[in-house]
Image (cartoon, rainbow, N blue to C red; front, side, top):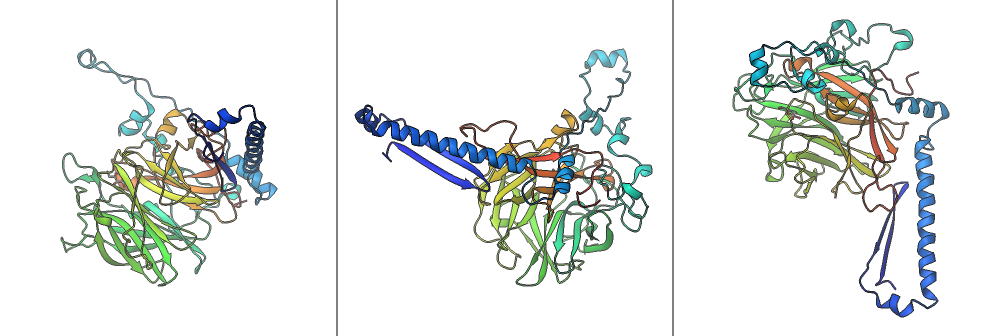
Length: 479
Ligand code: GAL
């Protein structure tokens, strides 16, 4: 019997995956026993199994939709508020006047919101990059309106200066019970090193901000500074230092920073490593290398529950991602590496885990211009990874096709709120990179997928990863 029917039923997270492959090679068994007693037993067992699993799957979805079993009723209500779909209705400005000759030469295609976003002279610019008057300022008393994240608005630190932590990531440090936000300090002029090169700001360094509440951020200064004089140094200001991420190594007691190190033309394509005894630095720069001998551009780190940390980077000219564990003290990669999302041309990877499943969000490769995010999932961190679709919900179609006019940089789990994460993204202002904005939004895991994946027999293979657009929102326990 087992030669004809191969059933593999795998329990996954709290949902179930069912793989029922029925080999339809001409079955001698079926032919010999078609009229026999065994045939109905096999069929009914199979039907029973499927019904049972359907029931389990249904119960799982119910559980998930009610916000999981660990949340209080009030938290569940607040959780649901974050999952409300908020629409954006931004009117496009009337088409600009063109001379009849220009109109004849090149007929005008309809303008989209994305064109307006990219057009530095567009009157809609202020919608995406609101001015000083709307800043989020932790020094002000907002009364009941405090702790609100307002994606895209200027965000000040506790001294009243705009936060400079682009392409960043957050470390929760259990020793100091503080959050530390590290990022690119870009408070310098934007220019083009070459006519066709991407807009850039000279390297100034990696900034660090500390917070207890994830809203009020104190500037801890530059924790890894650029090199001013030595032109051969990786950190020379004429080079590129992007997407710094910091994790803590319990074994060595060191805070370890990894970052994308490059030259102005993005041909060095390496990772750099720095360490410190304190979360607030100073970090001591160790070296750079091409991990596993491959080019490496956008990158991130992920530390798993078992203490093993991984480096994920865009490679082979950004056509694929590579993932591999770091060594025990986190200052180097090991020999193990897997090529993932091969040929998918993804960058800006961020990785997180929920109920034993690994999730990743990536962007497409369009430099500072926004594009569509995709979510990916895997049972094992080393893959295989499956692409499960665009996680963005709300706003409007253009918002969803541009990751809310931003690019992923980190996903922060929130202790005590299983299934809720903060999705952190950068709304790059390529005309003035220092004025790039932060788009932080609630990310939840657990809704069923919009489109069923092929051959899943109606069972949810992966939970849906959803990032909800909100003009303003706050964390459930901030009330
Ligand atoms: C983006 C990348 C950024 C930066 C930029 C430069 O695609 O995610 O980190 O490298 O390109 O053009």
